[in-house]
Amino acid sequence: MYELSIVLWGTIGLLIGIVIIVIECQRPSYYGIMWKKINPNLEQWFKDNVAK
Image 1 (cartoon, rainbow, N blue to C red):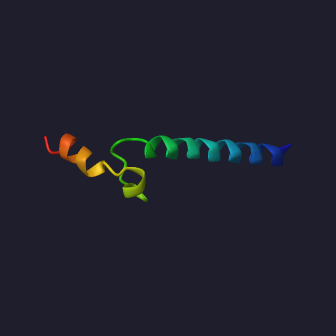
Image 2 (image 1 turned 90 degrees about the horizontal axis):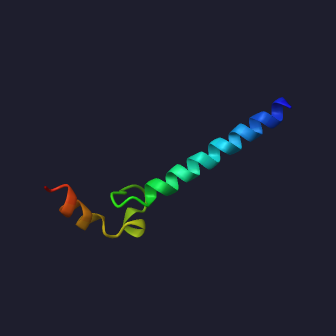
């Protein structure tokens, strides 16, 4: 029973982490790993939103 709960909570934590990563990568201001491939319009987004 104890071992099952560790696996269960580990799986839940992993799934939550994956969901958060996917949500963050879809933001228009994403600038992390492979940002040029995931978000090619980032430079224009910064010009429009940050330079104000």
